[in-house]
Amino acid sequence: QVQLVESGGGLVQAGGSLRLSCAASGRTFSKYAMGWFRQAPGKERDFVATISWSGASTDYADSVKGRFTISRDNAKNTVYLQMNSLKPEDTAVYYCATSYLAFAVPRRNDYTYWGQGTQVTVSS
Image (cartoon, rainbow, N blue to C red; front, side):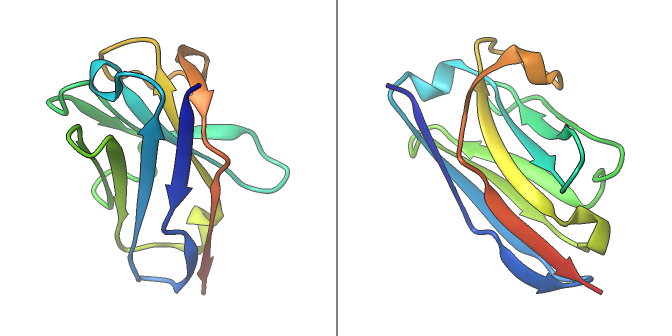
């Protein structure tokens, strides 16, 4: 059974940083793309970042480009999201997900397994 467990969320002031982690188990982690999505109250779950199976290719939502960095360590079955220069509008529950594809994909429907989410709150 595939399991994804996020950690690293919390409360931070605007301009601060957080690093999210997502530990995966139950499948060959290194074969598949991984992604981060976020969902604010009353809103849709939106794409944040994605990374290919090897880590060579990444893609980001325009709203986080230049501030967030996605990376992965296949030896540890873990994907990370480094978030810098955080803004109040980044406040949301952040979810990691694993795709059935190997290349980086921004579409939510291309992801088959999801974590339980971790709350990120940015105060102004």
